[in-house]
Length: 189
Image (tube, rainbow, N blue to C red):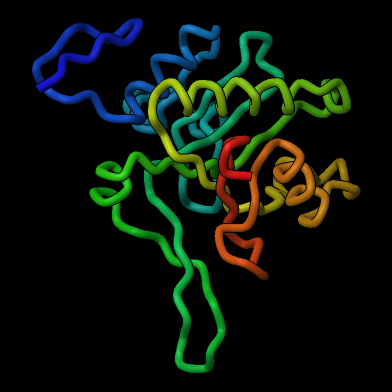
């Protein structure tokens, strides 16, 4: 068994999960890591939670050093499932298979309103892509506008979000569908 040495993670005889490696690399780049589990256990009021949320789910969140950008991630992989009517729907794979395959899904990226338009989210996504490469993670995204974070920016729509991800190197997982996109390295493009 190979021993992995990752900044901030002690040597171990056990394999280190991709998410732990990704977390360590992002921390080394100056990002604060906020775990929803830690926030719940801390006793702070729910309205002060900083982990990205979507409905009832909160995600492991990387917060830029200036606090302006947050990126939420999870290790639940996404895939398409065709129903009896021939419609494709997004489904989630189980946690264990995503961990085994090193799959990490970007669940959201937000920028404080006063910091938008400065390229901060683009820089943060570039950092995440580089960290994913170093940690061996395969990145996916389900481009969904998080309306509770963008109510003051009606110009932020799903098409614009998909186009933004594509400019960052993401592409359709399956031809003709952009509900799930995956990062494609320059070699894969």
